[in-house]
Image 1: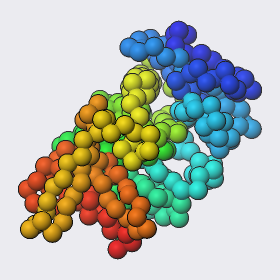
Image 2: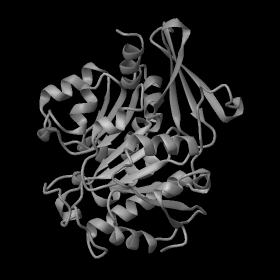
Image 3: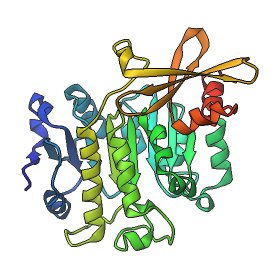
Image 4: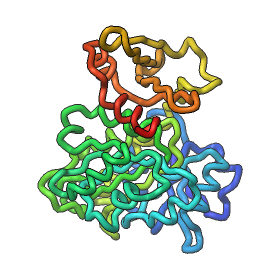
Amino acid sequence: MASFLYPIHPSALSAETANYLAMIVLEQPEEGLLNQLSQLHPHNKYQIAVVQRSSSDTIEQIISLAKELKVPPIFVQPKEPYINEVVSGYPSLFVSLISPQSNNKDDLAAHFIDHPKTANFSWIGYQSYLVPPEMLSKLQARYFSSLRLGNFREDYSAAEPLIRNNLLHFIDFSALRNCDAPDGIGQGPNGLYAEEICQLAHYMGAASRLEACFLYGYPKKITHRQIITSLIAQTLWHLFESLSALHYEDPGSKHSQNCLFTTKEVYIGDHDHILYFVTSNQTGRWWIKIDGLEGITHYIPCMYNDYSLALQGELPLVWLRHYQKINGE
């Protein structure tokens, strides 16, 4: 096995794992996947723990331990995780989901849109004709974010602000178009390209608040010779590389240094309203400042395009959606 992969027995999960960048949590032996991953070369120095879940290890237990150790778990399993196992330890949910469709009943998109704990939900890569209109109406009614496949393809970077502040991240490999993963379970002629799912994993690895990531939606048995196996390994590589170069940034933190951020004021209309944008001098990422009820200030991830739109005198959609959400309008 490659020098950056370290198998660990679940009972050995303790303070020693604090030296690891992340840990891969496998539901079943995935020798083919680990073989593919071991052939990839890290470009930063890090170590990854590899843990085989036992039948008695719950997702909640692993996430709880991982939070104590500050080592994010990356769950890799063929089937979609059970939502109750995932959400039970969270008072509120901040979720990113990459998936192509919803049956409006039993899948993760439906559960998160309806779940009372969901505080923020970003759905990326869905295909409109595979989603009931009433589900999108529910999503909009709760001021959640979405980026359908066509809009994502027009500008990959539009997905990054939607992912940046979330804690839990899910990648459904059935979102891939069939010709990019013919041995996967996605049978659609349309879907994400292989490089696009790797780009999304990169954004997830750069999420400052990442606590757990789930990769699922592939055949139960995969070998090292399959394209889908290679693609899962490369997706993990992009996630790890991004995580290893992570710059924690929060303009609203009391510990942030003022020199790290630049605030820009934009007057809307006849100076009736001022929008405040904040940009990082390190990474170039953007936030928009919104004052909520009881004097609480929120910094919402956004794009340079939102700042540019405001300069033209238009209210960015990200400001309008979050202002209404924060102030209950």
